[in-house]
Length: 54
Image 1 (cartoon, one colour):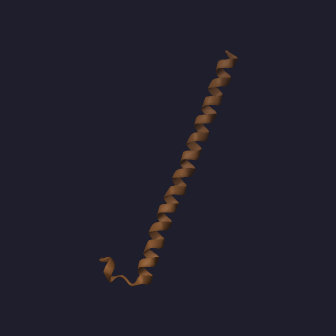
Image 2 (spheres, helix red, strand yellow):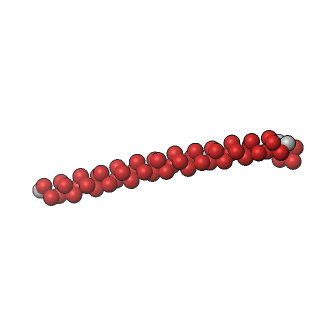
Image 3 (tube, helix red, strand yellow):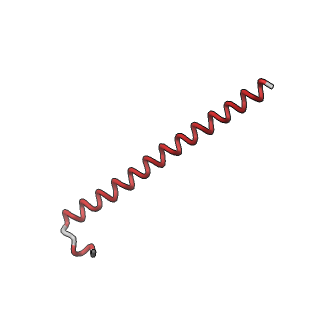
C-alpha cells in the first residue's frame, strides 16, 4: 500500500500505532536491562560477601 493513497487520518493512526509499538519495545527493553543490572549487582554483592567470609 502506498502512503499517498492513505487518508490523513489513517496515516496519523498508523503513525501512532507504530510510535506506540516503538515506545512499548523501548520500555520493555529498559525494564529488562534494569532487571539484568539488578541481577548483576546482586551477584556482585554476593561475591563480595563470599570473599569476606572466606
